Image 1 (cartoon, rainbow, N blue to C red):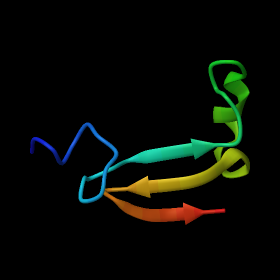
Image 2 (image 1 turned 90 degrees about the vertical axis):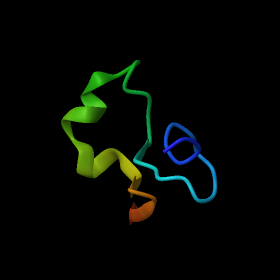
Image 3 (image 1 turned 60 degrees about the vertical axis):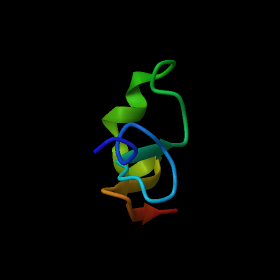
Image 4 (image 1 turned 135 degrees about the horizontal axis):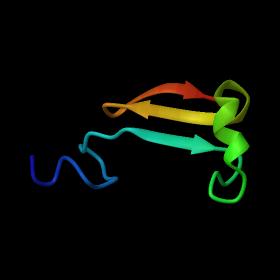
Length: 50
């Protein structure tokens, strides 16, 4: 799967979570995911886009 995983590029498979904050600075962001998730991409398809 070289070139299809481990990268963000056209044609690559992706699981990507975009949050409205930095969980390294505030772990509580992960305690309320529906509130903080801005985008979720699973297997290269957008599941949530806010």
